[in-house]
Length: 172
Image 1 (cartoon, rainbow, N blue to C red):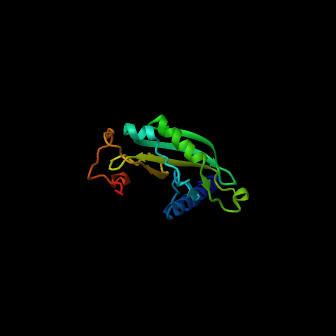
Image 2: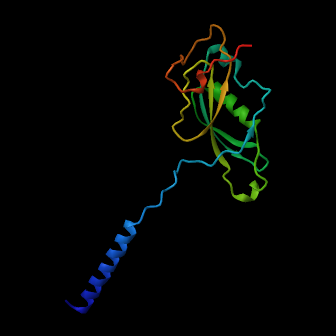
């Protein structure tokens, strides 16, 4: 063997052993690329019935997925509907979000915190098996109304369902 090829062989052995040591170490767990930071606390007006009356009469239930920005003042802006099961419910979710006030940290302006968020709205008329799944990780807001007598039932109750919509409304 000549001197240059022996140096090449030595370099290859060193590289192989270093690579083997790197591969033998415990891999660092990658964070979930779909995991979002916790949404800041929000205050939705509690004195407003956010279930659209036309939807309650029609027995309409469904889900709405919304994206929006949170300003340093805590209001939602650039609201966009990503997906919806019904335009009426989407319109109500958009109105609700536009009136919401988020409690943002004092350093929100300078902290470099995420400003684009996703939120899932679930509209249901208990008892119901309305799905609460969105296919992507998302925090959800449950909006319930009172099932009106004679309104059609789109998502009949299922005793195997873990839906929060299964709970019967309190009778007063």
